[in-house]
Image (cartoon, rainbow, N blue to C red):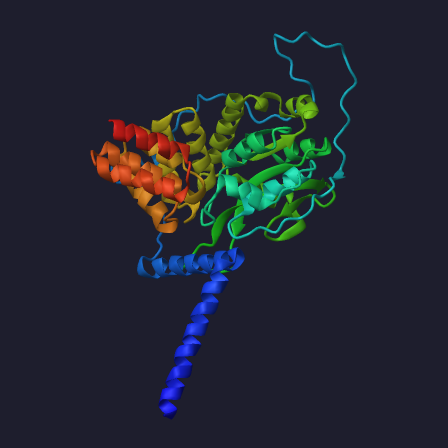
Length: 421
C-alpha cells in the first residue's frame, strides 16, 4: 500500500514538472532562453564528437604563400585620405575661397542614447537600436531583429542587412557603409555630431566547445573620443554603456572586419558627410583605397592573417577572383579564426568563381560545422553542388538556407534558377 502511494506521488510529481515546464515554454522569454541553452549544449556536443581544428589549408596544387606574396602591385597607389576640404568635381563650380574648417577638438563626447543590453547573438540589432535612438527613434532591438533575423538562432547579421532596415523602416534618415576606415575618420565624424557603428573582434569569456578560440564578431557604436586618453568611448550592447577602448586596440580589433563602418545621419548632414569622406564617398574609390591599404599591410606584416583576408575580400569586390584566392590561400596557411566564415563570405565567392569547387566545398563544410544554420554557407554549398551536377542536393541546400533565414533573397533566386534549369 505504501509503495503504491509513493508511486502515485512520483507520477503526480513528474506530471506536475512536465506541466510546469510546458507552461514555462509558452512564455517567449523562457522559451528563448531554453532554446539557446539547447543550442549551446548542442554546439559543445558537436565539438566533442567532431573536434574543432584549424581552417583547412589549400590543396597542395594551389599556389603557395611565396606566390601569393607576389600579387600584382599595380592597383591604385592612393591611401585612405580624410580631408576636411570640400570635394570638388568637374560638374560643380569652384567655390569662392573660404576660411579653413575648424580643427577637430581633442575631446568630443556625444550624448549617449538610452542603453540597450543585447539578447543572445543580437549585438547588431541592439547597436543599431541605440544608433537610431540617438536621432529620436523609439523602438528596440527586437523591432529590428524581427525583420532582419526573424529566427533568433540566426547568429549573424550582415552590415547590409542593418543598412536595409534603416532604409526601409527609418527612411527619414540617411545611411551608408564603407570599408577601410581609420581612427581619424571616426574622430572627424564624431566631431561633427555623427556617431559611427563599426564591426570588430569580440572574445568570449568561456568555451562554446572544446578547443574554442573564443573569437567572434561584434558591433560597437562609437560616440566619443579623448586625445589625452588616446581612446574612443562606445556603447557596447554586451559589456555596457560608455566603454573606453584605446585607439590602437580598436584599430587592431577593427582590422579583422576590413574596418567596415556604418554612418547614419540626417538629410541636412549629407554635405558634411561627403566633405569628411572625400573620395570614400564613392563606393568604388573607397574599395580601391581599402585594397591598397590591405596590400600594404600584407607587405608590412606578412604574418598578419587579417591583412591577407582583407586583401582577398577587396579583390573579390573588383571580381579579381584568381588573385583573391591566392590571398585567401595565404590567410588559410596562417590560420584564420574558427568562426570567421560565420561573418564574412567573400572566400565562398572567390573559390566558386575561380572554379575551385573542391576548395569551396571544404570551406563550406568547415563553416557549417561551426554554424550549421548559416544561410550564407548553405547558399554556397548549394551552388557548389549545382556546379557538380547534383541538382537535387543543391535544391535541398537552398531550401535549408531559406529555412534558416526566411525571405533570404539570394537563396530564393538560387532556388528558382536551379529549378528552372
